[in-house]
Image 1 (cartoon, rainbow, N blue to C red):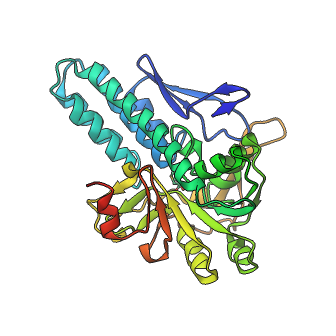
Image 2: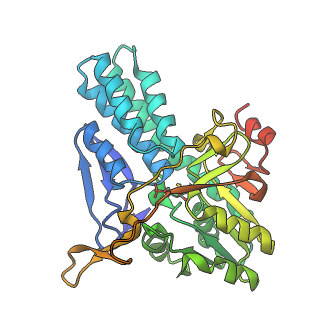
Length: 348
Ligand code: MRU
C-alpha cells in the first residue's frame, strides 16, 4: 500500500533486522520501528507495535529467522527463541503457523539461517498474495452502492499487505463501485477508529467511524448491506475468534437479516481446535479499558484516565462467533459456507 506515494508493507526484513510500521503511533505519526534481534521482534508483537493476525504471523516467521541467524548453530537457542515467540500473543493462529513453518523448514538443514530467512520471506509474500485473492473473491459479493460495516482493523496493517476484510472493499472501490464503510471504533484499543479509518482515508474510500454500540441501530434501519470482519483463528467447525465485539455484531446481523462474512487466509484456520471453545482468548491489561491514549497539543502521546477512578476493568481481547451466525468465509481459495466439511475441504 502507498503512504505519501511510497509503497510500504506492514512488516519487512532487511539484513538481520525486522522493520515495522509502528502501529501504536498511528494515525498521529508515521514511524518505522527496527527490531535488531528476535527479542526485539517479540517485544514488538507483545506491545502491539505490530498487530493483526497476518502481520503477527509474518513477524513471528521473521523473528524465527532472526533466531536462526543469531544461534550460531545452537539448537537450544532456536528452541528457546521459538518458545519465546509463541508466548508473545496467544490467539492469532498465524503466529504459530509461521513460527512452526520456519522452524520445521530450517532445523537440521545445511544452511539453516539462510533457509529460515527464505522461508520467512515466502510466508510474508504468500500472506500478501493470499490477501489480494481474498479481495478478488470478496469483491464478487459487493454490489455498487453497498454500505459495509467492519469491526477492528483487518486491513493491510493487520497483514503484510492488502488485508482480509478490507481487501474486497479496496478491490470494489478501485473497480469503480460506490461503497461506504461503517467503521466500528473497536474499543478498548480503537483499532477501527485509528487504523481502519486511517487506511480508508488514504485509499479515498468514503467511511464514517461509528460508536461500537451503533451497529444494531443502523442495521435495524436497513442501512447496512453486509458486514465483513477478519479473524484471528478459525476452528475446524468454522467457529471464528476475532476482536471482542464481533460476536455481538454477528447476533445483530442475524437479527436484521444482514449477511455476515468473515475474511481470512487459510493460515488462520486451526484444524487442531475442533470448535471455538478450544481457542485461547487473550486477556489484556485493564489499563486499556480505563485509559485512552492520544497526542496532546504538542504532539506528545499522553495516557488519560476515562473511567471512574478506582474502578477495576476486565479486558478480553477476542470473542468467538459461532459458525451458525456466519454467512460465508472468504479465503484465498474460495468462499465457503462454513461447516466442518467445507473447512476441511480447503485443506484436502
Ligand atoms: O489485538 P489485535 O489488534 O492484534 O487484533 C486482531 C485484529 O486485528 C482483529 O481481530 C482483526 O479483525 C482480525 S486480524 C486480521
